[in-house]
Image 1: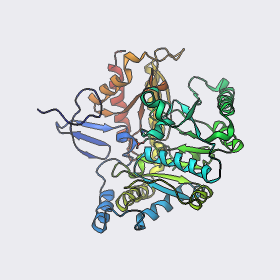
Image 2: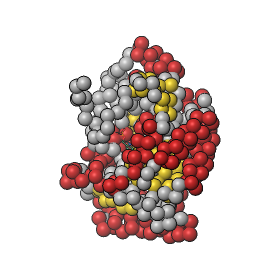
Image 3: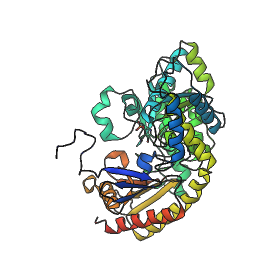
Image 4: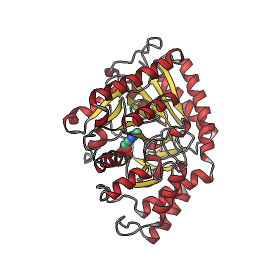
Amino acid sequence: MTTSPLFYQAGPPMPEVSHGHGVFLWDTQGKEYLDGCSGAISCNLGHGREDIRDAMLAQLDRVAFTYRTQFENAPAVALAHALVEMTEGDLEKVFFVSSGSEAVESALKLARQYFVARGESQRRHFVSLRPSYHGSTLGALGVTGYQPLEAPFADITPSSIKVPGPDFYRHRDDDRDAHIRRVLDETRARIDDAGGDTVIAIVVEPVGGASTGGRLVDQAYLEGLRALCDEVGCLLIFDEVLCGVGRTGTWFAYQQWGVTPDLLTTAKGLGAGYYPVGALLAREAIVETVMASGGFQHGHTYAGNPLACATGLAAVEAIRREHLLDNVKVRGRQLQKGLETLRSRHPWIGDVRGLGLLWGVELVMDPVEKTPFPAASNLFARVTALAKEEGLLIYPRRSLNGLSGDHFLVSPPFTISESETELLLERLARALDRLDR
Ligand code: PMP
């Protein structure tokens, strides 16, 4: 057998995928996997959907690609209207891209260009959380707080001030308010050190995904960030690449806290795994200022092409037609209950947290001290491998800056049924029972 020319990641050889249907995938050996993480939290409608295929084929029959500066295309306009409506009209302008990193990159550049257009070019710092994940391109990586990913490129990424975010696992109800105050005070102090008028934007994920394993913000924290941004005159960016488009039971997670950003990024679930589609949404005044200064100096070839947008539109319409946001909430509660039961059986499941169908499980050595496992234990990788053996896909990561600590995400497609949710929990329970710490 020749070795594969692909070099995505080190590790054992992977099974070859054969096909998928609903929440299941099969490899070429006939083994079945329940897709408990929707691919990369992207296949939100499950696999093999005929309605999405039909919409894509219909668009392919008309035209697959036109360039956004040569033609307007109806699916792009319709998807942009749908996104504006999904955000209740607070964010009126849409810029399409093809990935989450591109969406974040676009947000950072639009924010910077906005201030340049206003004669405030001294604004050159971003503020973001540690830990956090915002993407792999240099700009998005610059605001990412995940040490192993940042380290090789630290000298060549844009300036970002990394501040702690709220951690409600380690600061439970008794000192929750004080914790939020401390986190916000530290953010404010770091901004003051740099000079408030040098900051372009604060970037935050309302529900942490890859970096924090489902850590949530809350209303007081977001209100505090909004007030801070308004005071220093910088923008507030919510990165909903992972948690947006219905994943948490509302179109966007931030809507559950009622604090609106100036810019919003989304991707992953927008194309539901059938075609890459991402988007940046922005307040109209910001876009108008940039456009009046000669236009946004940014763009990607495949952005907003007809096939991408027809796919995104079909995915959003399917979520609406099948009332899938309701299913996300109902199955989310079932999943939460099941994961809590697993926590009561396994003392090293320290925390179960999330919203809708986005659940993070943090593994700790000691549930009282909440001490993470040492990095060498590679628990996150072992639990994922065992789950895969049991026929379940979960989304693993090291937590706490990527240096130590372990978590995994459980985030099945929105279409998952009651019995499939039970099956997911059974397979996860078997994997956890086999985990030799
Ligand atoms: N932002 C967030 C919050 C993400 O979770 C991700 C991907 N995990 C990205 C940005 C980057 O998206 P992509 O991999 O599509 O470039």
